[in-house]
Image 1 (tube, helix red, strand yellow):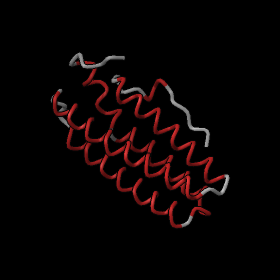
Image 2 (cartoon, rainbow, N blue to C red):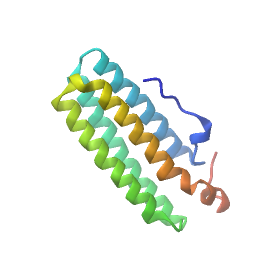
Image 3 (cartoon, rainbow, N blue to C red):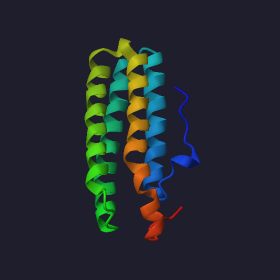
Length: 134
């Protein structure tokens, strides 16, 4: 797939940046498994990706509420939409691994959408309130 972490994706919080980097690695691993025709491994990786994303969303929501980010509900709504899309894609991988290329493309688009619609929108608030650690 070739997606890679860029510093411009940073939200200024190491914990969340690390999660985003792990998502990129998992997406690449899913793509590699699908390219090998290993649907079982791809489905397992998707389950891990969804678990990571669900945990990430919960921790990030708590953080945003703690720093009183005014648009937390908007971020959370975008994240929940992304979680729903990832869950659906995971089911698709499990049911039809031969549709791999389209699934990986959709996963990448979902992740980029998540970053652009949700996380990146709170970066300036994190910096302004002194909560950035990067």
